[in-house]
Picture 1 (cartoon, helix red, strand yellow):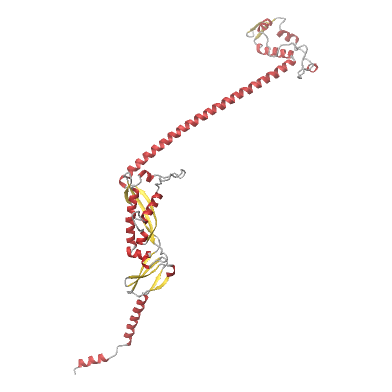
Picture 2 (picture 1 turned 135 degrees about the horizontal axis):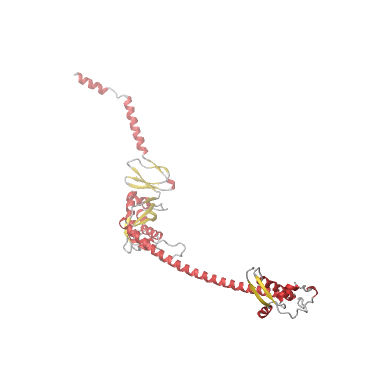
Length: 387
């Protein structure tokens, strides 16, 4: 036997070291633990988990009791597919659509959707999560289907409305007109109904795809960039026309109000002036009555005052008077002021006035000296410069 054959037989008979055996066993144990850990499924409260066994859905973990740790067959015998159960916001790009009067506008809309909540006493295959997984599979596919659906519904609804009605803003103070609601909220409600189930469909999107449409809203309506400026100019001119009509109506109303105010002003002034004239006439009559009563008590005193007033008017430092001996003006200068009547000794009339028997037949106090008497009393009046 040769040396080489002897060495080979010795190596074959030599035992494997224990360290290597331990390493191999540890590796196998780690692989076994890792494989068994795939049988544990943790379900978060924001998730829906589908359990599959060899490609067949065997359980859906979507209830409140399924939160936390669950067990399935290890991989690859059993798999778990996770879906987000929260409300998703899908905001696609705006699309250009045409109105009923063939005006093109760009409309932005968004969709809020989620996987529908499970209904009680429903079979496994009829659960919304299972229908969503079989028909769509992922959120991206679901959003693509929703975009197509929203776009077609939006185009059909906008095509039924004119541009003026679409852009009009309702007055909150005016009562709503039934049957003519063209606001964005009304269009959004119609879009929501169309996306959920169209009139020509037998089943809703919830029954077919397991998707619940929470809300559909129009976010923005704009004009394409090519004709924005022209549309803005046309809108500005229309608003200026409306403002001009309002301004002319306001000016007409202003003229009516001013004319009414002027008429009322003139009426008030006329009544005030008439009342003032009436009061002034009454006051003058009362003043004359008081003056006549005062003069009637002593006519001689009144004549003396009249004579003194005549002196004041006709005599100054440049006046020369030539009077006759019988002139009353000369008599007052020669005889002086007569003694006043004793009014306290005069009898009273029935109305309380004092009468004088000597002056009972005297002329009224308003009687003036006749011009003929003045001319006879005054022989001549000459004025000149002092020499």
